[in-house]
Image 1: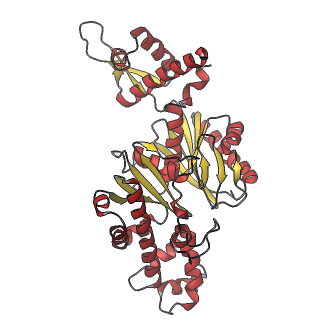
Image 2 (image 1 turned 30 degrees about the horizontal axis):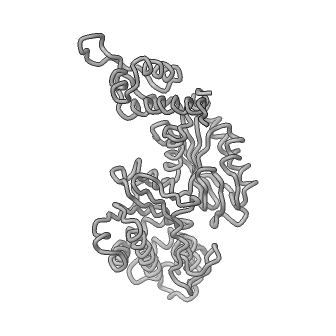
Image 3 (image 1 turned 180 degrees about the horizontal axis):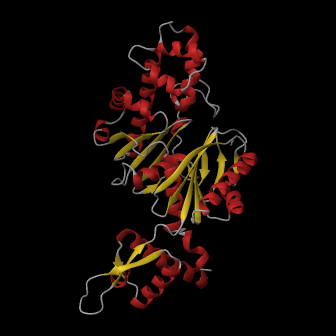
Length: 412
């Protein structure tokens, strides 16, 4: 049995979002060109353009050259017709930014936020987002969607957080998308943080020309976002990419997931800091890291990076981490045969400093025929790849099929 009403609504959405994206990507462009590209009749194009003009999503910007009749009116996409919020959740703080419909991000900042358990975390997050929306609203900005880059096992289709090792055991089977949409009254799109980052890398970073790429997030946790044939690899349940929980050393340290010797337990930022703090008492008095600890009585990642000179404890610690990361990169290359692998997160800069160690590990453990054709680089997305990715995630859900939710309210 065919639901003609539902089919008609989908066709209507498909036609309008197709025309809108053609204007976004190829504008200024005329109505006749749009009819030729889409195969839609000129009257159909005229009706769609009228709707998009009424919504403020496109603008008329002048005239093209005449081909024997009236000069065609040119159309462009209005990137300021709406804004999205991008949210990157990490342990202890949440980064939030605002972007227009071309993903030009502004006003990105980190906010201390306790997300260790869902109920209290949701209240704090909603309060923060409402405050940002109100402040931005005073500048005349209206919001059309929210993207969230979340650490852990996320079912993107439903927006359910199945588990978050990094945030805590309370995050189990939590319907975060539903809760946020109810509280904010906006479409919300949620992905694992590495999937959001690989989307940002594909659209706006070093992977703009790649259809097959991997983004490895080296931060509070370690995971990978994978795009093959220009599609994010989700896996059967949506949990693909958890390379941080591949066991590297059976006798290694206990991981938050319950196993021993996971990559994340060996060389995530918390793991490295924990290892350094444990080893500090045995360091020689002249070691720069010990000198730093004697002054501040604390060690953070910045201290490790500063102290990581040749022959020092910190240098050896980060060199060992680069070796393990290189082995993980080799595994990714053997598994997926990507055109490029990008390293991001707080530890990516350290990996760049120890690039020879990392590349030696790749060469030792990856098929040379594959590795030789793979570009390995530190992400160029800067300090907030998760926010950029979360904004991109929202724009993907708003402007691209099958969801394309930007026009939903106008197709009822």
